[in-house]
Length: 454
Image 1 (cartoon, rainbow, N blue to C red):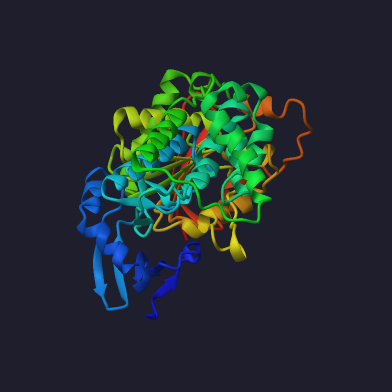
Image 2 (image 1 turned 60 degrees about the vertical axis):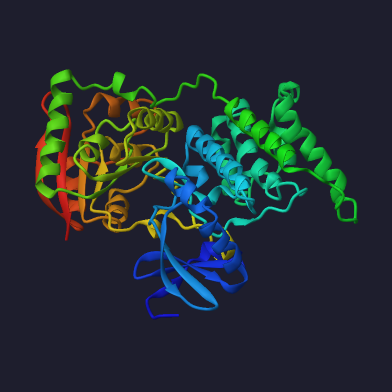
């Protein structure tokens, strides 16, 4: 192993291949035991078809040895299913099924259906695990069927029929949500949905029944056409899981702001002016809502990751991105006051957000800091230090206590926030940043700042 090569902790479970980080880039080492399957993927035409349809990451072979082939795939920002909105998870499920259906045509099959193997490139779900394929053996069932149900059908059904927030169960169940738990949490009416009854309720019962049987089940024979029929049924099942009409606090935020049309346009223009001063290439927008201000940057060539706590705001943003075929803005669910933690084996298998940050030029934090201070009691210094650890530049909006939205927030609680003044805000942030520019938005109690890390 070279001095610049680091093991990627998330890939330690696969004996066939291992991911490393080499000079800041992901590389995958294909070991001897898997080389035959890898060559079949490459030579059969399956790799070409999947990459041409943007379902599998492209790669280049950078080192060929008898016992190991090292490939360098397209580099993708890693996100997790608890950070995805409903439609992102649904699209990931459909992509997994499509990949499996195509693989069967080449007498290959996915040996797992782990949702973490699907990531988003240009907002399209794509398989990043090149070593996920194995030779299909006639008569055998899909070995990843149970995993697919736990990683996709169960969480989608729970989000649609029980509560939108239940994709958060992934935080406690990183290997997938057990079918037994899903069956308990789903409403009784889902038992009358034939597909959900089959793939969750009945599947859970059969799983429990056979778990008590010490004998291995070997007599199940399914020919390829029957397997394709099952995959088609799984596809229909996923397609028919839809969200009800949800209303959340911030979903229609921009319809109820206290900006006049003039002040809103002014805010937009100030941010655009700040953008032109620094020309960022990689932007993280915290509190992005549906992405109106994110697009100031994405429409000018920057890559923007748009974070928001509101799941329906992210859902709306993602659906707009799909409709308009936008590639430079990637929406994710994220609670800044309770960020995604490091999880899994030795707390290294799934990384927290800071550990995934790479070459972030700018943080955008609009109409956010008063929520962190008043709702979550987070001191200004903690916010400044956190942002400073991520990016070089910061565009942040300070909302004065005289603002009507702040007044409403403080209406039914004691104001203990003596530190929350414009003067103290500047004093605190100037410990970490140099203020390059600041402009008050007309007819508001709000000021926009452009800062650079010291």
